[in-house]
Amino acid sequence: MEEEALGKVYDTRILRRLFGYLRPYRRLVAVSVVLLILSSLVQTVGPYLTKIAIDRYLNPKPVPSLLDAYLSADRWAGLNQVTLLYLAVLLLSFVFAYAQTYLMQYTGQRVMFDLRTQVFDHLQKLDVQYYDRTPVGRLVTRVTTDVDVLNELFAAGVVAIFGDVLSLAFIGAAMISLSPSLTGAGLVVAPLVVGVTFLFRRASRDANRRIRVAIARINSYLQEHVSGMAVVQLFNHEAKSRERFGEINADHRDAFKDAILAHSLFYPAIEWLGTLALGVLLVYGGYQITSGVMTIGVLVAFMQYSLRVFRPIQDLGEKYNILQSAMASAERIFKLLDTQPAVVALATGHWPLATGKRVEFQNVWFAYQGEEWVLKDVSFAVEPGDTVALVGHTGAGKTTILSLLLRFYDVTKGKILVGGVDVREYDPVELRRRFGVVLQDPFLFSGSIAGNIRLGTDGISDQRVEEAAEEVNLADFIRALPNGFHEEVRERGSSLSTGQKQLINFARALAHSPEFLILDEATSSVDTETEFRVRDALNRMVTGRTSILVAHRLSTVQRADRILVMHKGRLRESGSHQELLGQRGIYWRLYQLQYKDQESPA
Image: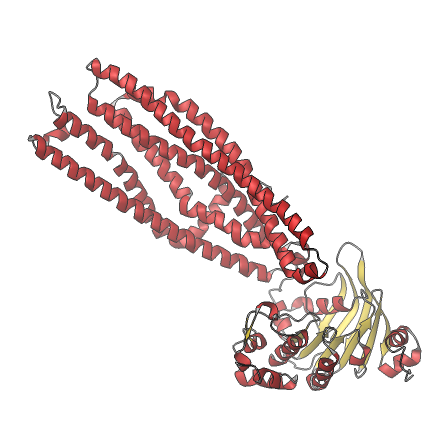
């Protein structure tokens, strides 16, 4: 529905904000406007020179005009002078039009670069909640299609509209100065031109709206199915996916066909009306000439002016659609830019100076929506240097606890303290900088292995990258690659196994030397051999660090200092592995389910 919304043709508030992006390039815009004025003026000179050539030299009048007096009395010399002037006018027109077009296209590209950079930077600041409810395809459309529409506005829209209006004004003034009566005759077709333009505007407006909606749907559908291509192929869903994509693609094709139809009718109709206007001018002008009221040169100049006057009218019809589309795109982009993250840093955000920190949850309640509580009155503490594990059934609230600790969301009720300070008082960037996190689904970016471990942190040396790989038992594998740590990683690490990607994620967490370590189901997606390597590395990773582990595999958490058992959003049990087995409660039942074929050590 957001894609279908049409903006106003002229919205002062949005235009004022858009023009703010032109402010750094105001000198270029000013030069472009001057060139546009000069180009519009030059366009009116050519027909007038034609009138002089005809009336002064080809069919001279009895009394020469003031301008004619400056020209040579010799017919051929005078024609040569007019010809040279006409060529100079054509050359100036080319130079002015070229320079003006280049400057505005250049400015449009710079503005588009600035706007895309701002949108991308803003997307990185938005909290996880926003991405939970916003389709990725819609965001891609904002950064691509909508910004492209604004580029058309800056490069060939607002300034070009100003130029078209100037051209109409200068040509109209020239025509009136030559013959007011002939100008009135030429305006006979004006109501028809207005009517055709109105019909084109309405048809093109609807087609452009449908095109925009179809593009957004195509982006969303492609993003979803390309990301899930393995599932599509696994379940032989190609035919259904192709059929659905064909429907969306057909909507885009049909909308474009309607837009093409509107354009194919509009431009010939304007040309036909222009020809009709020429016929009217010939009939009325011929009558004026035979009556001795008008010269042939005036009529010929009028015919040239009438041909030129319809070009700006055609352009204005097209610019109307550009302006309306730009208003809608700008409104959506500004709506995105005005979206404020729910998780923000306080002006007094700080980090305690002490290195030893205690993590404490005090009566924490949390719900993603309304009062559908995911966590209910959760309280526990993690002492500095301790390793605490969170276990429980799927949906018990384990990952939510980590998300709240890292301030991906803020608690609904209660407090989370780190070093005795509420996490809501910290800058989220500074808070997360002190946590090393390994998630269940390993994510790698395009680039080198070393770049993925360093992840843009310039302070991490090559030696530290190699040490981190050594600590997670990954260095031998990397050195065996053709380019070692500089081996290129494909998109999302498709050239590596899941276990290898996960070990790189472990090395990434360690390379940043975090004070806290968080592992969220970090071993659930690796094979048994890799799990043993990870488990061996874990013993070194958690030493001297406050660590929180979330795991379904209880073998990973048995050595934890304390195990917290979550059930339906509540903390139900707490203790060491042996203590919890002795209670024969929820943890004991989880252990029995995983090791039912083995003899229980309890």
